[in-house]
Length: 134
Image (cartoon, rainbow, N blue to C red; front, side, top):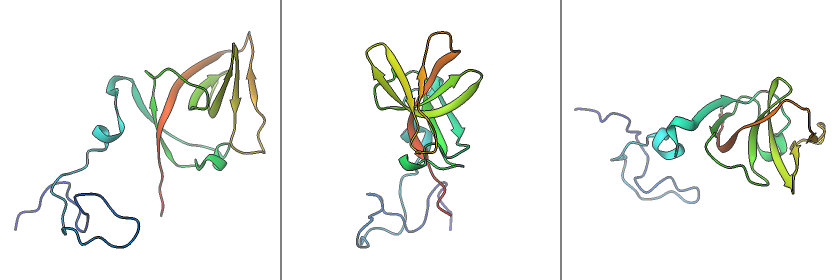
């Protein structure tokens, strides 16, 4: 018997129901390509692994993998990877007129108001967080 590549047994073609079990087929007929699913702008998309716990209250934990799109225009409230004074950091961005503040999702960390003279670059907008559950 020939096995289909990238087919996971026990997965329904319509998705995986999180409620009661679905009387679906035993095998998927289509493979899921994560790059197709998660990446809209391949030339501008990067992956990064989270280090630290400053975004833990947003559900982002150490070891999670970020999908970061550098082509997106950052909007108020987005989670973004920023380069500030020689280091990368992951924070929510708060835009108020011409003022920009980087906001952590952990009360142990202070907000960072971006001021003139800081070495700052908005590196990319986080579009997905991939989590390990085991």
